[in-house]
Each structure stands twice: as structure tokens, then as C-alpha cells.
Image (cartoon, rainbow, N blue to C red):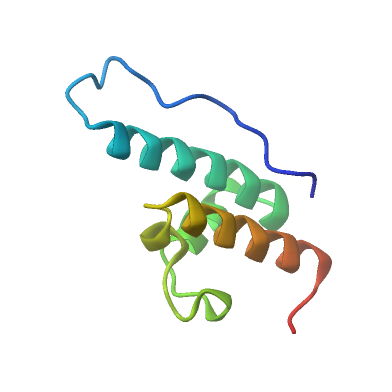
Length: 88
């Protein structure tokens, strides 16, 4: 897996009524879904993975920690570990 790429900036419209935090959360979700699709081999599997507790995230679901930039980085790191089979 390469370094994470920005697929899109936080959109300003048509969700103009959403806060910047929520727009950024949605952007991180889409970026994570894209990376997870590449790593796990399918969009459906990746979408399911986003909502299941992960041991590598202290039993939190990836989606639940994407609220912050550091949570996003933790999820990206976990996907890299999964891709390369690093579990320790």
C-alpha cells in the first residue's frame, strides 16, 4: 500500500449546512473505504470492515475513530499492517 492519497478535499457543497468537522469526517470515511477496498479486495467487504470492532484499534470500529485526524492515521496504519501481514 502506498502512502494515503487525498481523494478529495472536504466538500463545501451541496452539504453546505454540515459543519467542517462533519465534512472532513465524511471525506476520511471515503478515503478509508477506498484504501480498505484495495487492501481487502472488495468494496462490500471493506464497508463491512469499517463498522466491525478491530483488535488493532483496541476493539473500536474503524469508522468510530475517523472523527479525528489521528484516528484516521491509526486506521490507515492498521490497513497497512493488514496488507503486509504484520500483526505484532
